[in-house]
Each structure stands twice: as structure tokens, then as C-alpha cells.
Image 1 (cartoon, rainbow, N blue to C red):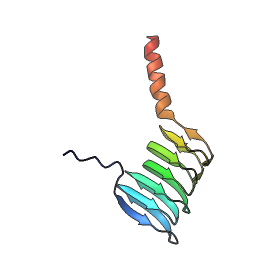
Image 2: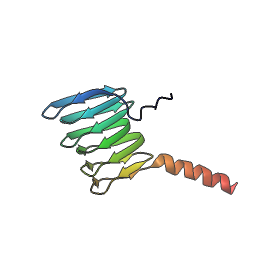
Image 3: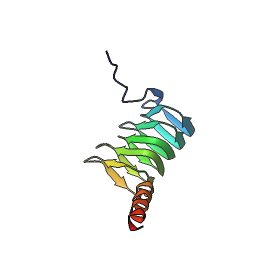
Length: 127
């Protein structure tokens, strides 16, 4: 029988509610934050910001899922998803931006990779 491929990555680290951390987080895989984090975050996987979490950081990750509060600038390789309880203040660079009904966003979104691809396609059409 065929096994289904896992759609979600295994959580490698977890900062629980009531916990606070100040510093730099570097990770592979998936990390979930439900507490308070302040500093910098660099990851080769997914960052999950749970409801009730407060993250004040500059972030570079593969993908981010926001259900809590995030303040800072974000560089995303694949996608950002702000869930209905999520709030994000800052600038984001991402190829895919998903904002669900009820979510809050105050900042600027840059989708340069998509713009560059369209520009290249348009220039090829003109040749």
C-alpha cells in the first residue's frame, strides 16, 4: 500500500506560552513559537507563530504561518500565511502572500521574484 507523503514538517523546536527568549534563532525543519521572542530568526524551513505569541524580530525563513503577533521585517522564500487571528506589522518580501479574512497587516509587501519572472516573460514576447 502507498504511504502518503507528510504535508507538514516535524516540529524541531518549540517555545511554549509563558516562555520568553531574546537572541538569535537558527534552524532547519520547522519551529513553533507560542511564547515571546525578540531578536533574529533564520530558518531553512517553516516558522509557525501560534495564537497568543509575540515575536519582535527580523525573520528569514522558507515559509511562515502567523496566528499571533509579529513585528519586524520578513524575507520568505516560499510563502507567508496570516491566519484570522494573526497580526503582522512590517515589510515582507515573498513570492506568495496569503492573508485570510480577519487577519491584520500594516506594512509593505514586495513580490519581486514574481515581478521579475513576468518582466522576463514580457520581454521575451517583445522579441
